[in-house]
Amino acid sequence: MIATRVLRAVVSSILIWGAVAGVFEDPNVKTLTDATLGDELKKQQHNLVVFYASWCGYCQELSPKWSEVARKLADAKSSVLVAAVDADENQVAAEEYDIEGLPTIKWISSGEAGGKLTAREYNGIPETERILRWVRKLESGTPAPDLKTTTDLENSRTFQTSIIGVFNKLEGEAYSAFVEQALESDDDVSWFTTTDRGLAGVDSAPTLVFTRNFSNAPLEVVRRPFARPGYGDRESPAEEIAAFVDAHKHPDYYSFDASGISNMMETLEYVEREYHVHAIVPSRLLEDKAFLQRAREAGRAIRDHSQLVLSVAGDDSEINDAFEIREVGDMVQVFFANTGSIKKYSPSGPVKPDDFGVDLIKTIMDSIEKEEDTYRLWASAPVPEKDTDKHGVVTAVRSTLETIVGDQSKDVVVISYVPDDEDEDEDDFYMSLVRDLADGLKGIPSIRVVKFDGHANEHKLLEYSAEMLPAVTVFPAKSDKKPILLDDPMSFSVKSIAEFVHKHAGVKFELPEGLPEEDGVFGIEDEDEEEEFDLATHLGLSEDAFKGARDDDYDNEGPSPHDDDDDDDARALTTGRGRHTSTQQDVGNRASPAGTAAWGVCGRP
Image (cartoon, rainbow, N blue to C red):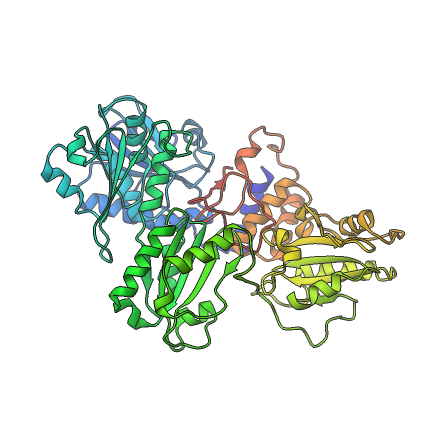
């Protein structure tokens, strides 16, 4: 496929990864091939296998973690074979185990050595300890041990978090769903079952019992009936279980000191809540029992959808810088961050420690749920000294946007973008596009071309496009000025944008001839090249490097013989968190963090 071949050419020509031969090479990791895979896997009951490609950036990120997994299993005298298969070079094995993206981790086992092999895929977060937890459960064959005595129950509560599934019999749909969730889980949650309702302290079954034993709070036991009519809104017992565990597996609040911004970001990356509620506090409050009790109550009140985070402010601290706090006093500063967007909310100013608690948090959350802007924080850059450049491009910021687009005599086209922090020179692609558009339409006095930094500024008029930057929006002349969005950012070109403006203009004009019509970001003309570019962006390649390698590849080799393969969809190359996803995401989104998937995949060759 062209996409894979071009990226190999890019990698080899730019030498971005250097030597790649060492990927997954470790004395504790067995290298398997098409010729050896079948025989080797049958020699032992359990096998942990990663399928990878040496050119895949996310495979390289996993490699040292995989070595650590292998070392720890070897140190523990585990009988599990830890292996690696280069799926690029061993496509028979990759096809046999349905490998559609890289890296992919498989648990391949049999009832006994030499028996029929079955495979289970790891879908969790690619971190050493999480993989090891998953492996140990599978190796033990009892992912959810049965509790029979009071001693068993007391032992289960020594874990930080644990869940008991209470059943009338250890069989049936609800029980099977519970065991399957236990097998799939890579969280630091211990799973148990019991048929003794009295032991679990419940009157009926099936019921879930979650125990929270965090160091910063008293032991808490939460009970919830499930898999019964009238409880929950989930479609299946498995979804009920997953939602219940997710709501209770985190503490009432996380706390970080003044230098803990890195730890905070690393921790919150895997706290999948709609909101992270940050309370920036003076250090003394982390020793104030009354304040911490109010924080616990607030955290519990919102834990179904939000996570409370306490962070210590201090002079010149990382926390201050991250939240742009200028003054540190004996007050609490509260910020609500929507994890699925760039929206942020806060009270009008710092609050007294005694005023922080459930009532304050609920008041703000109720306002947010009503879609009110009472507590909304809007990013706003300073008004530039000169707002119009020599090309006629107008720079808008939050405070000036409404006036600029509200001119009834003008058809205003706004290009919202996120600047490249590493490359702010004049030749940035989007700025070139804006300038060329303004030059191409310069002879039409009714048109105004505007650029809007969507990272430094937010405005309600452009809010619907803020999650998919870059974006092109038209505000027609002689109208109610409702924004009209060009919804295909990958087709951006001077000509396509001009045609869009022409279609919606309130003041009619003749479309100039000869407008540049090269479609797509960096001249990307089809889906394969779009996929290539997205991976190239992950590799950190420049526009010139990408286009040069792509052009060289076409010149030297011609069209790929695999261009018409039916399995192209399984080879998409798009960015995700921790690896590339095999499902196409919004590749136009350059503003917000990657999606919520635990990881993604590089495409199969």
